[in-house]
Image (cartoon, rainbow, N blue to C red; front, side):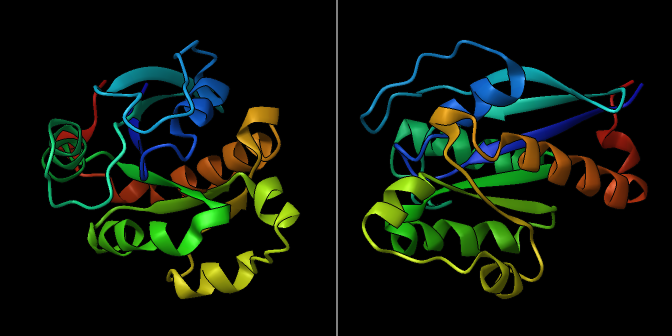
Length: 178
């Protein structure tokens, strides 16, 4: 049975740990302040008989590391090379999150963007065209989400299953753990 590794990457305080908990059933402590996750945490997601290791990375604003947390995130993404990336962004502060997104797009790995806290953005009168955003991100799936209420989790799991099916043959043999 093939084990895939997917990394959750994003700025601090965008809900990565909440998404991680929803995907894996883990009880990772979440807090409403930057820097809550200071080490990577791993959990397992089972989709269509595939065991997927999901790694919750510390928040980072870029792949240029300025702190230990950012170094942990950068090294995992760049050196450990997970099979895919889930970029969790804050819908209410989307522009601030896009610098990291552009860097993640340069990594040769499939990417899914989770636009979390969609309810907060809508309450502020912000409108996000997820289809247009997907087009601008080279066709990467964009999933609107309110992770704290489990809204969008099923759609994310579907996007992960689709991505795994599409990219199964592109996995480097040395990256597959049996």
